[in-house]
Length: 331
Ligand code: TYM
Image (cartoon, rainbow, N blue to C red; front, side, top):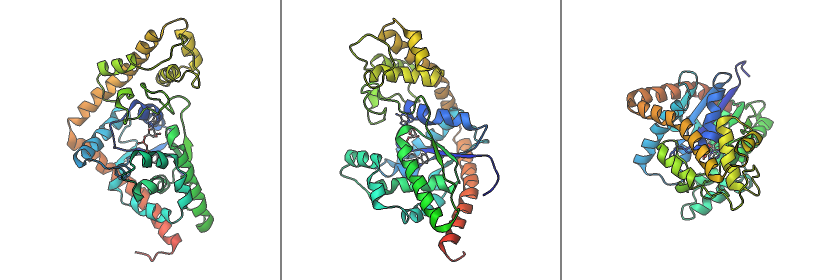
């Protein structure tokens, strides 16, 4: 395989506005990787339609998501930023890999089980085969490392299994990717219900990247803690307080012990205000930069077209190799 910098691939669905969870679990780490690695970041619109989307809203969120990627520090020259449906190789490799994936493997995916409960009236084949498309995303770019939050680890592991199986039959076709899960922020919990992952489906306990400062402060003030009075990092027994401390640590780079020492003897009110403030300080410049970028749509369109062109150069090479290995007639 070619001699090059290690390659990173990751993506986020434009199925909702970006949240503090997707920022701390994924994007924040992406921008830290852009100097050392060759990075490819995608807006996975094909994944988003596994549940019903309003076409106008999907279009708006897709462009807003690109603006937020850039506002979070992803330089469109250094990184390849693109929209999944603009590179048709993703859908094509997904079909092929689906023929090397077991029904049983897909049935065991936690996210499928959860989402099929949430969307019981619309359990589509797309929802079921979703992780195969994700494997195609990753394998098309001969990815070394996939920075994601904890909830996506199982999908990256399935991707590895599919790649190993395919290589076992056809030789060394795919690079086997490693997941990268951050120490802090890999599983940001809801502020209203700290036993559930922070998610757009529970908007009251969910902080969105574009929320105004007063809304963020209010969400933190109303965060659920516990009836005890001690600020201690103990996710099992103190999920609410520990979640606030992890958010604080993920943003400030402090360890939970340092944060505990800082807040020792203080009340939950102080903790909530301090975490809210540090989140506001982090997100305000991102929101302002996003607004600036969104004022020039033509520039954003130029960026995603250039990204798709660069992505296709890599993806089409991989797909060509796959076709040859499978014995498809040359085009
Ligand atoms: P998605 O769109 O649900 O989430 C995007 C990224 O954000 C992380 N994340 C969180 N991390 C910590 N705490 C949370 N509360 C939280 N909520 C979301 C997710 O782990 C993810 O990293 N299938 C993927 C998208 C995808 C992808 C890929 C990722 C498609 N193809 C290829 C990597 C590589 C998904 O639905 O993520």
